[in-house]
Image 1 (tube, rainbow, N blue to C red):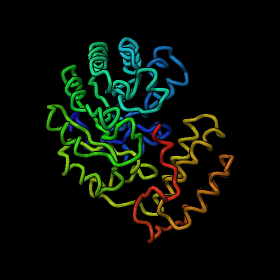
Image 2: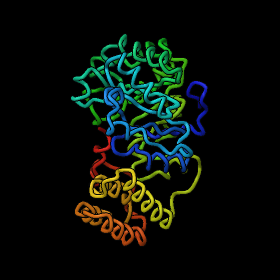
Image 3: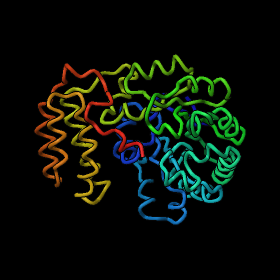
Length: 337
């Protein structure tokens, strides 16, 4: 799998997810076999203004995170090009454009999924970034705005003509948000229409799902969001490796928490933002529901350390667990933006 001239070590890609695709978790995903781990969406306006809060999203592990892909969002071609230059100055090897975020605040600004309604402007953004940075430019798109406006192939062709080197398709409409089922047939349609690599995304929760997507759509790579939450080992399993042992899970959860605290810098804020990770990591283990309820009340770093030690040092897989479901008591959508 190549992104322009950059060769990825695998065709399994971590999806950009808010509050998840930060340096600590990207580093874990790379360790266990992900070929690419883009940042969560970063505001182009924030980068242009050199906002300290926005620039924090560009912090990375220079040794572990190779290649380094930065996903930016915005609707103004000039600002997007300038923001891409800032990202390049901070080490970006690939610029990814978010054209799929359905959140009203992003959409109303002309960014995210709003670009699906304006293929010419979307293509102009790709051209401007490519000319300004010389870096490979990719995009993440949706199927369209709603069921009556499915135009992912039209947009994909326009982006390819503008110089985009790969496109990830999440085949849900903006109207769907994250509900319903992803229409994988659209991934196949896009793959058949384009010459550049197509990355499939949507409803990949297990190893079997990922391989089935490859087989059914012919896509070049698979982008995994929800299936990777609390499960960086999925990337190892996708390449035939084993699931984590209880001891490995315990060690890695603690490592992730310590890295998360260091990354966030504010310990109490880090505790609050790591609660969701605790829920995801505990999925499928005996006693997970009670542990998640307890975790939501943790307030200090020491409390979290003790709780993680107590639970994960003895936690065993729950034989009744058969994969993620919509009613398993875990909030996944906080990662979707």
